[in-house]
Length: 477
Image 1 (cartoon, rainbow, N blue to C red):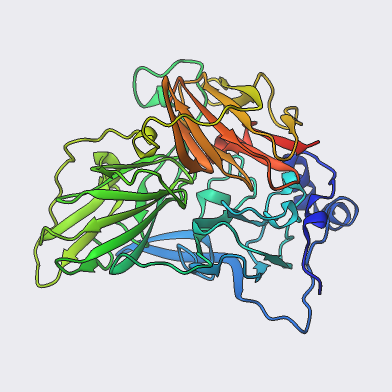
Image 2 (image 1 turned 180 degrees about the vertical axis):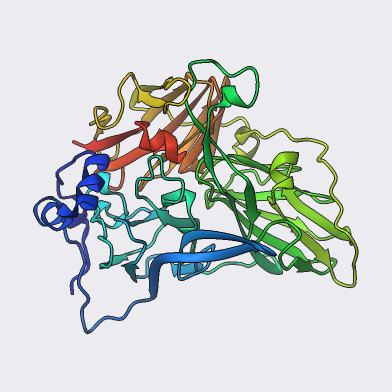
């Protein structure tokens, strides 16, 4: 079977509300919707091809601590799912079977691949009906730490999509090979569990009376188990350990520290930074990744965990244990918790001038006590945001991102990367990402060059924000 080419990936697709599509599927009309409006890209297998990976999406029971079992959905029965290791530019074939019980699909986050293979129905990617299979096939690029996860809607169901265990690392190895300036590699994904909707006004004083429901959690993991209940990360004195850290939570940012040690940040969202700075804390919003080197030069038993006591106490952490050391793990709060993208940029070097500047303002429409908040971009909610704007291939666009709300937003651009050019009032250049965290009532600027034609989804990576309107589609002219 011929692989999807660039032209096929760029073919104009009918665009419609993701909410309407999934409701149609759940009503039993999926086969008609798919046949008429959704491309059946690589949904059949060729007898002459074998899969590089096979993924089954299905319910599972996950014991995150003795006697504490989470019923969730996962990839191949594990959380995180199997780490997919691909070679840059080498064709890959991933067969997916959907036994999750609901219409689903898998997004390959951070890859520059055709829209049909990206795993987002907004771009025209085919959804996988319950009990059906589909094959993703593409040339993976660029190299770096990426990840894969469900891109289905969850709406009010906190057991679906990114609230569930449907995520895993996707690592694209450089075509030229990895120089390997480290002794070993450790993959750590953070996730929150047992979410429930709450009216903040009912549990503490201070939230605006018109604010809608928010999600709170009872448990968390960094890795596959809660802090103190899994196997420790075992290290030896003198080792250089590469930690690939991912925030795979549905809608919660995290800050992490490793007691007695510091992080040398080599890459953010899988992309090498111009200035590999050393920091005490990693602040990762949802979907962000950091590749960091830790020099193991302080023997003992330590906690690698959330700096927030509440997060750490509900399990967000893992024990790091040196060889021949035993005892209770030590936690000490980091000295400097400041996080600033600009410290990893090019000092004194300004970004190139853009060809066009586009302003995007993000705001909340409060749902009121017991209701759900709604989100807007420039005053409109998905799907009324379409098209968000139209671009020409090869031009440089500067996006002025204005978070005019009291919530933090990790803003993600599909199938492209962008360069951070300003954070607040601080100009910078050289930091390349696919997701940027905007703290409450803050501004940032990013530049991107459209170099991967096709419908391109832009959204907040907090599942509840995306589901309730914080999304738009960028189109190529």
